[in-house]
Every structure is written in C-alpha cells, then in structure tokens.
Length: 322
Ligand code: TXA
Ligand code: MG
Image 1 (cartoon, rainbow, N blue to C red):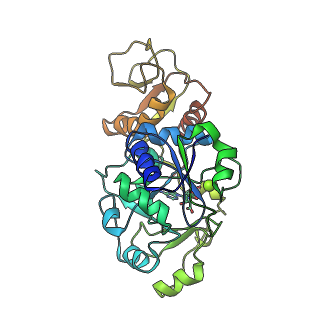
Image 2 (cartoon, rainbow, N blue to C red):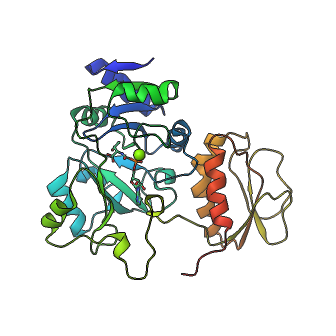
C-alpha cells in the first residue's frame, strides 16, 4: 500500500505523480482530499472513477493564493474580501471561470463557474508549491461514505485506486470547507455550511449571507442540486443507432453510425476515462456550431459510463423554461 509519511522526498514524488496525471491523496485542515492536476481532463476523470460517483459533481480546485486564482476566474470585490480575510483556510469560493481558463471543463461539471480554495495545511501547500499545478480534489472517500480525516481512512476506502497517500496525521477540523458562491458579483450565497461559520463570513462582509433556500418562490434545494447542471441547448436523443437528417452525432467507440453532418467521437478507442474528459467540451462544441438536435450512441453504463449516462439523461429530459 502506498501510504507515505511526509518527507521532502515523498512530497517530490507526489508532485511528480500529479504532473504525470496520477492521483494523490493529501491532508488538508478539513479532510483528506483526492487530488489530480485540474488542467488534465483524464486525471480529473480518474478522480470520479476512483470515487465511484454515479454523477459528475463539480470539484474544488486547490490553489496557493488569490493571485493564482485570478489566472482561472474573476474575483468580484466580495470575493477579494473573502480571500483576504479567510485564505489560506477552509473557505471555498465559487467564481466565474475565465473563458480560456487552463482548467478541465470536468472540474466544473461543464458549468461556467469554478470553486477555488487556498488550503492552510502545510502539506497541502507544500504539494501545491512542489507540483506547480492547481489541484482538483474532492474528499478522498468512495461515493456515499463519510469524508476521511486520516490516511488510514483513505487507504481503507480507496486503497489501490490512488497512486500515493501522503500521511500528514489527522485532519484537524474534520468538517469540510464552507462553500460560498460569489460568482454573481452581488450578494454572497451560502452553498454549503462548513468549517468557517456563516456568521464570521457575514461579519467580514458586513452583510447577511443569502441562503439558496431563501430565494423567493424557489423550491428547497438538496445539496446535490445546489450546482445547477450544464445542459446543452440542443435536444438530445439517446441510444441512437443511426443519424436522422438535421442531427449532429455524439459517438463513442467504433464503428460510428454514418453521417455527413457534424460529429464528435468521445473516444474512438472506447475508453470511458477519455470520453468523460471530453464530454462537457463536446456538448459545448456542438452547441457552439448551432446544432438543434444531437443523436447519442449507446454508451456503456459501467465505471465512468454511469456518470456520463446520468448527465445525458438530464440533457435529454424536457428543458425547463427559463
Ligand atoms: O474541505 C473541503 O472542501 C474538502 C477538501 C479536500 O478541500 N473538499 C470537499 O470536496 O469537500 P467535495 O467534492 O466533497 O465537495 C465540493 C463541494 C460540493 O458541495 C460541490 O457541489 C461544491 O463544492 N462545488 C464545487 N464546484 C462548484 C461550482 N462550480 N458551483 C457550485 N458548487 C460547487
Ligand atoms: Mg465529499
């Protein structure tokens, strides 16, 4: 088993693994994270695979500081204030991505926003510095299990699914970071209560936080619904074995159904990790060329196929009125 104590050598090895597209579990002040290079789509896909998540939830991207964050996202005044007061620390800020942000679309589950956090734990910071890459990391547990606060928890849960576990002792807080949406530039919205009390955030901003539940007329949200999901403009037809006139094709594996129209193959070789890493960009690319209808071939439902099919079913469901 690949648990390593924190030595300069172990940090260097972990950093190299991240740069090469591997998965490294590491301690933060809240819980252990399962990290990958946030710019590497296949590595990010491997996180979802290792967690066994049946859907693509957006991930937190860990960075050293707000200066690094500004390479990826827009910081409205409210966000800069939050970063000044609470970073490094257990606060995650959801911000609007720059259109050309060098991050995989998969970390945002296709959304225009990205969640950024500058962790305070010395091992997390050493790993960020040594690797030089932004680190996408959800809590390092299998989907449906509780968040791990020790290296042994991670090993018990993820075992051979992770390339290296850095053992930095127990995570001191044991409660995940507070997630605040500051992407609108207006009032900050509390998306997930966590290690920084909402009262402290409100005091720092001098205004009360909006809760998603308090939006007039809106139905109560469960945590899984907090991030609205990217859905293509085009209508989506699933399980297609042929392409009808006017349809674009979203294929997986070979052979493809015949078409003279626009098409994207998520993975000609039939690799689900490659398909996951290309999925959201493919939907956006098909939208961008003005496609009205997309025919999607059957995609296997094992492994990452479950999450891809989950997103496709949502995209195929009748669009809600805006
Ligand atoms: O303390 C923590 O936050 C730990 C450590 C490892 O940093 N990470 C963690 O990640 O708890 P995870 O993936 O288990 O939870 C991330 C939360 C989810 O509730 C997710 O919906 C939200 O952040 N989130 C991420 N990106 C988002 C986005 N673009 N918009 C809205 N919510 C987002
Ligand atoms: Mg979690």
